[in-house]
Length: 150
Image (tube, rainbow, N blue to C red):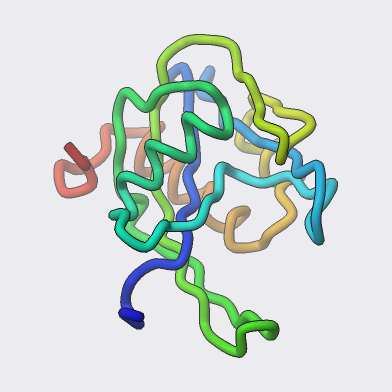
């Protein structure tokens, strides 16, 4: 196992622009985190690049296709007591095609939220902290070229 390879990814999915920008939140329907509101999350498969995981997970969890993808430039790391290891989760930002969200079975609700509402609803502190940078770097101005993922 490559210790620098991401274990999972997190994606802030955005639609609209300016003050009308909304963040997609999903509510987990089962498991330890049932009832938790989160951004799109997913595990990186063994032969998969993290950016490919982003596109796959957004489609699987929402039914929407990514139209623009960026690195958020930050990551979450936390201790997993079951595996007794540090887990690394890079964050991404995605713009998606227009369409109706079709949550998968792992989620029972979704909501397009303002940044303020998302900060109130998100369960995990790292995801709440991420919102300020996403608003500043992807909504209040155009993202820098280095953030763009082809």
